[in-house]
Length: 151
Image (tube, rainbow, N blue to C red):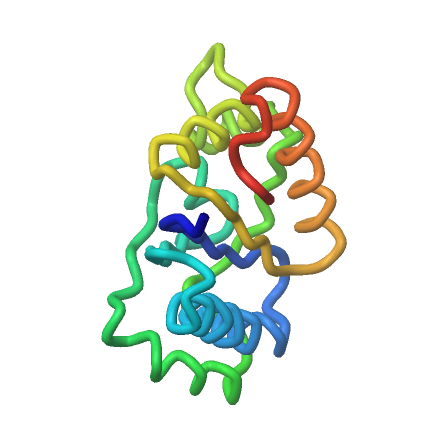
């Protein structure tokens, strides 16, 4: 049975030519899945400035009427949603920069934000550090929150 899917996108690391293209492609992919009846509903959320946006809850929804024009992002470099080099495994840095409160971990703060936003799928777009952090977040969510989010 198909369901409503809440998709989130974020970019992280250095500004690379593929970031915008990936955003455009993923929005196109998910909107096609909705159009083809593979899912019953769709919400697309973008977190601003990578993992920082996830940690502080800074995001926006991409309006459905804008989905068809998002393919134009495939012709651009950089990231229209910003990115950062925040590491979820660097507790000291996240505390010092005010991204998490004392007594909380970045992994738990990120997991709680994704759960609060009812995210089903988080696409992390970036390089090796971005994907290493995504693996850590995925492992954490699987262990602590029964894998309720696909990262």
